[in-house]
Structure formats: C-alpha cells, structure tokens
Length: 387
Image (cartoon, rainbow, N blue to C red):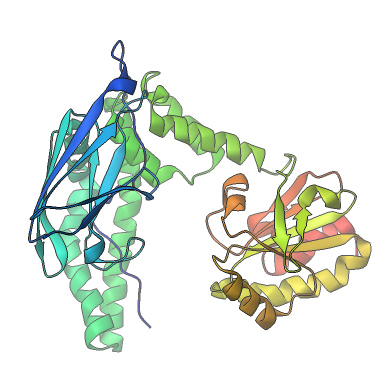
C-alpha cells in the first residue's frame, strides 16, 4: 500500500488577496512581475489567476520574463507563475510554480532549475509574501514540523520505495502520527496569532487556507477576531461569503435549486420534485467509498420509493465517458445527473464524496452528511418516511 505524501512546509493556494487602500485608485495601478530563472530557455511561462486558471502566457528569453497585472480595488492578490515544461499544472511531483502577492510596484521572482524542479526560489518586492513566510516559520508547530520532517520523509521513502516491511510500516505510522498531531497544534498557533496580528493581510490569507472548510459558527468567530479593515479584504470577505453559502445549504434551509443534464440528455431541475422526498447522492466513478455506498443507497431506494422517495445520483466526473462507465458498473435504478463543472460543490458546500443531502416535499433540507451514510441512512429515512 502506498501512503499519501504529506507536505511539511506551508504551501499557499493561489487565491486573490487585497489590502485596503485609502485614497489611491487601485484600479489604475499596474504591478510588474519580473522573473529570472536559471536553466530556463525560450519556454512558456504561464500566469495563473487566483483560482489556478491560466490567464496569460509569455515566452521567456534565456530565463527572463515579465508580466503586468492590474491591481484590484480591494488590494493585492496572491498569484502564481507556472512553468509547464516542469510538470502538470494540477499534479506534479516536481515544483513548477512560484507564488507571490501583487502588493508592490515591481515583484521580482528568481529561481534555478535542478533535476527538473524549481530550486532556490527568491521573491522580492512583495511585503505580504515576506510576512506570510515569517509568520509561518515562527509558529511553534512549524518549528517542530521542521524538526521531524527529515525523519518522516526518510520513513516514507523507506516504506514506499525500498521495502513495505512491517518494521518500515510501523516507523512510518509513528512519524505520521507525530506530523498529524503537529498540524493540529499548528491550527491552534494560527488562531492564537490573530490577537497580535488583527490587521494582517498575510495572516488572513493563512487563515483562509487552513480554515475555509470549517463550520459556520467557527468561521464567524474567526472573522470577528480580525480588525474591521481586515474584514474588508479578499480573504475574510471570501470566508464571509462561504458562511452565507453554508447557511443557505444547512439543515432547515431551502435546498438551493439547480438544473443538470440526465443520462438521457435532458435537463432535470431539483425543484421539479416538489411534493416528494429527494435524496441527492453526490459521487464520481473514481471514488472508491462512493462505490461501496451505492448498494446501500439502492437498497434503501427500493425500500422507500413507494413512500415518496426519489434519488438523484449526481456525478462530478469530468467526462461523459467516465460517467457512463461508472453508471454501467453501478447499475443504479434511479435518476442519473452529471455535474461536470462541479457547480453543486459550491451551492451545497461539500468537499468530499460520497456526500448526501435529503430534502423534504416542501424543498427544505432535513438531513445531510453523516446522517445519511451507512446504517444511518435507513434510520434517517425511516424517521421521515415511515416505511
């Protein structure tokens, strides 16, 4: 069994970030991004927007390149440049991106290429980037993570690349437990740091990356710990937007409506099932736990369909071919829909699958998540539909 690698250093996701500016017009300000990468020839360099999407491309000249970015009104944005020759954009075992904040007039990126990966990365002209790294480096848990990273990486390599022996497995599990506990402590370190950095753009960025999928009450509390001016910037505004989305998809709220394509090529709208109980099962053909849960859903559908239960199997596969193959293997006897653009992930605020939501005949969410998994599914359905 190959265990998943854990990254022991802070890796910031590409998310837009802004610092509140008083009188200057941020709309008109341009930020120059100048790069110098030793070992890079005349190759593509791609600028990513705050959501990891390519938005501009230049060809480097012996490792030199430049971009001009229009600043946002609500402040600087964390962005990245990506070198496609060094690996896949979405998944790569080599380092092929450099991140920065657009909070200076000229941001300079320097690095070298060694063994197909970016090395010796330097970012200057971005105070928020420097503050982010300084904060992260000095969290007590970060110091401890640095202490154990070498042992963990050695144990990971020994088990996954040398020999999957019992001794190597125990050693890897030992250091994995230490790393997991330190990441939990680091979360506490981040929260504690807010009281001393209430106006910090960099810390609001760190908070967003670490806590954006937390429950509504937690997010509200953490937003209110920051200063009013910090709450006007992108990260905390984004967290507040997530709070609104979570509240709109919580138990007791009206189920957000949507329309998706069925396996017959027709559009099917959630609201068209008013008057019936609707169980939405979000899944994908590549999801092992989803496949294990499907027989349980089928069994309960057959048991409760005469009591007014409809089931919508909503796939988030990225291609019809994979979706159709998954449907053929699962043989689900209810409605099949494809959410190729993963729109439902936003409106129902789920990040992992399988994930289920139960809606009553009035269109109100009455259960979701763990209350609809495994043996709990039958108990919940029996509570509302009375077999």
